[in-house]
Image 1 (cartoon, protein in one colour):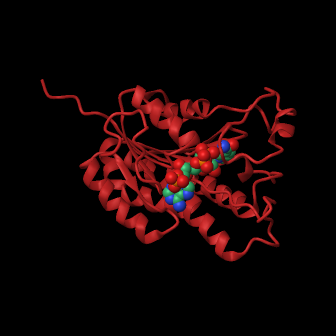
Image 2 (cartoon, rainbow, N blue to C red):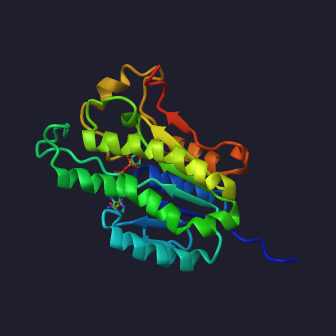
Length: 245
Ligand SMILES: NC(=O)c1ccc[n+]([C@@H]2O[C@H](COP(=O)([O-])OP(=O)(O)OC[C@H]3O[C@@H](n4cnc5c(N)ncnc54)[C@H](OP(=O)(O)O)[C@@H]3O)[C@@H](O)[C@H]2O)c1
């Protein structure tokens, strides 16, 4: 009997919040998780093989992203079951204010698009052969701010997430014939460091009247990468306690 190969996930933005919960969820299911973020591996991370499976990369820098793809390809050795594009940035003004369409400088706008929009497609294209080989899945983490103006999320962030939702449709169309599914999830108010002061006022208006937990988002990401969703592609699942009803 041959050895059973461990399924592999490449996950960006793994060091905190939703990404951290996602590593824990997939590891608990027996997957190998290759984590990507700007920080070096933190030895307090509780999962096995962590340091070996960590790639330090700045996704705001396209050259560094291309370099990281080569490292990832060596590590996955031909087959990749899932890519989760979770890393994201949401810059604020000097006093924490929302950056709108009038005052966001173009350099900031460009950086947001590099991390939130270009990195997901560059990674997916760079790893397409490995995803094809595994008939794998891609999950792009968008946001509630991608479909409506949000009181705290800035214009660059919101437009990058709207573009990522559109990219998900385009990718589903192009990757589908390879047997690779591409979906996105749009979280609402999830308890992580990205939240702004004042979020509690929004939470009071949600049908479920509470913040979401990163693990509740990780559960949906896992569903979209698992055998429970083999006929699901090109869609965006809202994980937001009914914020838009
Ligand atoms: N929390 C929410 O309520 C919420 C709502 C809607 C959407 N989302 C989306 O969900 C995703 C995760 O959000 P979160 O709240 O968990 O965020 P978070 O706690 O701020 O974590 C962001 C992650 O992205 C990584 N990252 C940031 N810039 C990077 C770069 N240039 N290169 C590589 N990695 C980078 C960070 O790692 P390093 O600092 O180590 O690089 C970190 O692991 C994001 O795409 C966010 O837009 C979150």
